[in-house]
Amino acid sequence: MYRGRGCKICGHTGYSGRIGIFECLNISKDIRKLILKKAIASEIKAQAMKEGMTSIFEDGLRKVEAGITSIDEVLRVARA
Image (cartoon, rainbow, N blue to C red; front, side):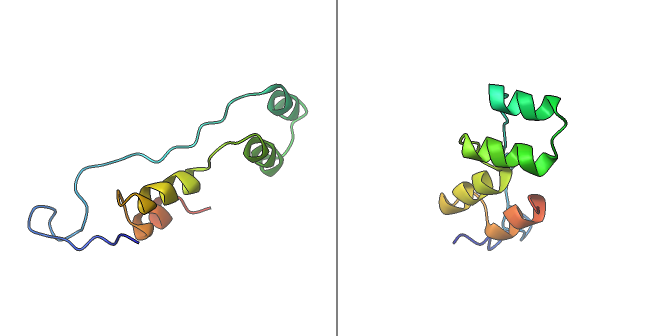
């Protein structure tokens, strides 16, 4: 796993610049039905994940695996 070490350029933080981690919910027929029946958020999220949605945390982990960011940073910004 990548862990930022820091240097003079980044002010000894281990980070330079910014990169987003994202979660995008496509409104399918099933998701629309859940929204219209005022389902709870966890039910909607479960359906979205079933349909292939990548959560913000999962996107962050992919960027950790790619060496773009650290697990510490993902945990800081994407706590459940």
